[in-house]
Length: 111
Length: 113
Image 1 (cartoon, rainbow over the protein chains, first blue to last red):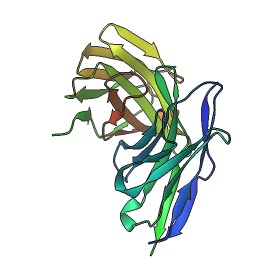
Image 2 (cartoon, one colour):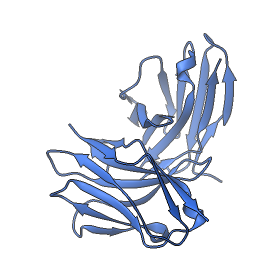
Image 3 (cartoon, each protein chain N blue to C red):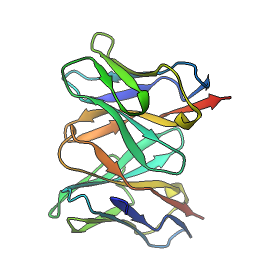
Image 4 (cartoon, rainbow over the protein chains, first blue to last red):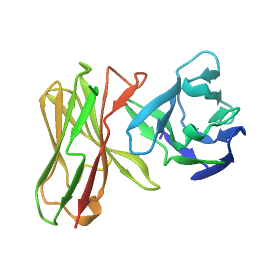
């Protein structure tokens, strides 16, 4: 079975501070991994994805994620957050022809 | 214009009523999906379709049905709405398998009283 666990439901962080949103997956086979972002009152949009190759993946808006096969993790990072990063972030893993989403992590940016 | 549109954006209905949520896309994608979002539960797949003649159940299809009227249109119906179907519903499309990005509509907020 394939599933994804987001370890934090909410993460508060001060503006201009770094942030890490944690994601672990369970899978016995090769996986494709994704991070999607949902801004308030909007649908989801893709931040970045890992398919193969380099384990460090860069996405939009200064975000990056690192695929760690030994720890089955795909944590999302940004070195300096902005108020506009306030959103809910979803980690997702491929399952056959479908994608399974985590429960989401709300990022709160503190002034 | 948005690539994926959903109508209505908000709907309040009563228990037992039939309701249809509509989704249209201009991306030319074959694959379309309906998800439900509940606070703290993330997105759960209701139904998906890989082409006009292909309809598949997702993890929470009970109480829902779908119709793929054309490549660009995929509707979700609640035959007899119940309060625990109150949620945010998203339609999405993709150009292929899981390596392809899914493009989401803006969502329909449904309240069943």
